Image (cartoon, rainbow, N blue to C red; front, top):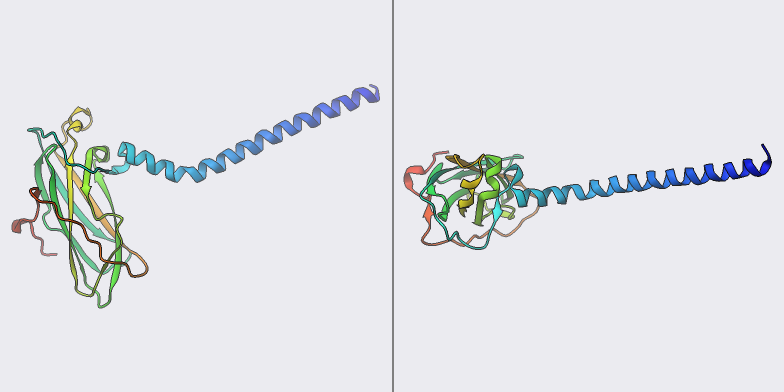
Length: 211
């Protein structure tokens, strides 16, 4: 084999190695990019599909009400050592599918100093999240309570009538709306949520809880 042939082979090998290296770098770059995009894309996916019990945020009330009814159960939790008594005014309410309703939660600061919290939420069954529409909500709002202060926090919502067209959900009789308050750092203004009028509410005295 002459020197010219060896040189040509070396050039081909070097070129091939560069192509492989470029492909590897592109793959690694793509994987890194996907990892950075994964969280916002997953969040967007959840909001669009309701996956994981993510509810939908809407600006208007429902304009279609069915005769079929569903019971909404309300759950409240605190986490991270937040010294609040957080609870629904009533444990549940039964509404017509498509009927706009208003539920109430209350939070009381049981500590001797101002503390702040922020609520997250989810809906079960998970698939129902795509059809649980909230018009007003205190979720993801920084809320500060003075020592001993109690805040009323309404939630205005309705269940989308299209839920009856989903085979896995058409026979669902109960949907649970669950909130969890987490502590946050710093002092923030107390959250204020406007009250909706002429809506079905859960602020009946029979539903009041003792703890």
